[in-house]
Length: 356
Length: 230
Image (cartoon, rainbow over all chains, first blue to last red):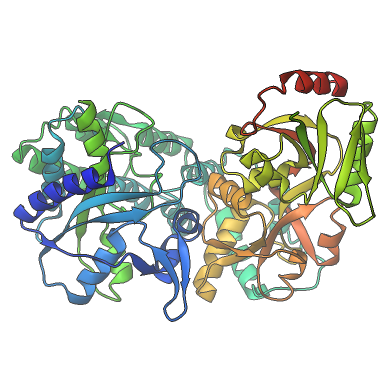
């Protein structure tokens, strides 16, 4: 594995390239307030980040990635539009052993906060990162969480079902089970049937959750039980969409062939993005479009997503990134701005260059 | 001469049952010295040394290779050791020390019977109370892995090293994940098990360390395994 100094030196070259592309360097703190990250990501981040206690600042986390502090810094001080770059270590606990499962490594990143044309900004970030990696035989995969959101929004069903599905885009297992439930493809559990028939527990009320919260949920379950099931064809079309994996240039056509409402604007955005990529010299026939790409990573990406991976399946992605408009809304306290960015792992890059 | 170090829980029913299990196979384990001294002896097997330890420390000692064999709950090995299968070999379930690691919620929650319900209730709870639904446990890794695999969101684990069943009534948690054998303590505390909330069925298990130095011990190991019928 590349030494830390080699990784750092390679990172400095990439940082220079990002600066040359117009980005201002920022250096977020390594110690980040744990509360913000825990509130955003819950137990997923607690399992992955190092949490430590500070006598004055309270619970802190060793920076697990740069995106959140970069967004915070932009929302606090940034003029628009803005381009930022950074280089530094991130820290992630590893639950599995393995030579590449390192718990501290460098990331060098480029982030764009720009309202004018999201698709052009997507292409700018992707092309800039692709240019740094062009000399290596990597596979580039792109996806678009926005397409999944659009499909869910376009379903002809209860808003509560749509919001439950949208909430679980990043948990494919639960998402699948909810689809089966909403389409009546699994039997109603006995306890729920009894509940809907009026059964209540003979037990004293304990705990902070109060009985009004339970009654509100029972009302939602009754509304759900009264609503028509999602047609099996709709579920099949949705599953087909989630399974779609093809050359990116073919993706709009393949998506149009899937009979789901509400897709047209999302497909138009995908086409605009592909055109912007082509304009920047990217061969979209060689890119893979994977409709489920980004569904198992942390849930801040809500639009375009991408990764660059080496052939060795044990290696993590050499570079990854995506669009996170919603995160700026959550952290912006009433303000928001479209944002997209990506990172390269210079240590991995140096390793691959050593091999190549 | 080097010996196979066999780690066994140092007290209580787990120790007695372990002694019984080995005795039934012709290997006598016993404590020596005073009632309070943690020393032991082995008869009926060559080159085996008894090491009495807290059941909770046996996974760590196995992982570090400081003992060759160890008896402890399968739940403890899975919870305390990341990638446990790479560190220890599961030689034999011993047929006692049964306990289920489960998720339980207040019995009064008539609307919550499955993980799907728990997830939906957690989402609404977070919106109503401004923080994630708290699940009290000491089995952080097992519970988190289970809930991640099952796609449950909007919860947080809070640490509880004892009297976990009391946390809901005391308003320090909304649900618990704990071990239970008869379910009586749960019932007494007005809690019910989710119908799909079984995380792991634990029992006392004999493990072998992959990290321990087995050089020169192949013969005694084979003889002991033959004696134990493994």
